[in-house]
Image 1: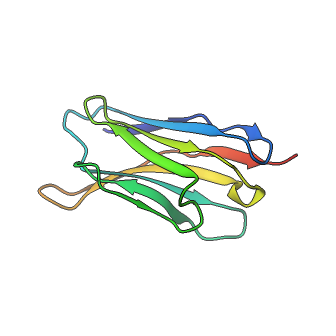
Image 2: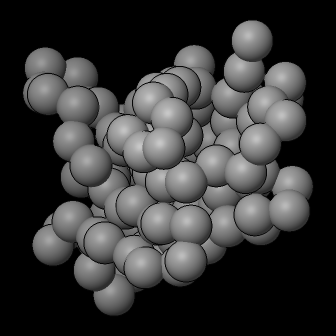
Length: 118
């Protein structure tokens, strides 16, 4: 059974930085796609950033230029470097490891809280 464990969430002042990490345990294979999502109170979960096996990235417009997603494929770890944080970035952040081909899987982490406040 694959489990994802996130870390790095914290309380930070506006303009500050955080780095989130998400590691997979129990997987004996290389992960195709990795992503970070977030859910603020009263809002739907939304995609923040994603990265493919070959390193292609995709970002939400709201974080473009401030957040950077990266991965260590050998260790099945995904990172999210968050700079210039704003109060509207406050949310629970979830990592996701997923694939549709050649095998199908979809794993989620338990979430880590990021709070941006002075």
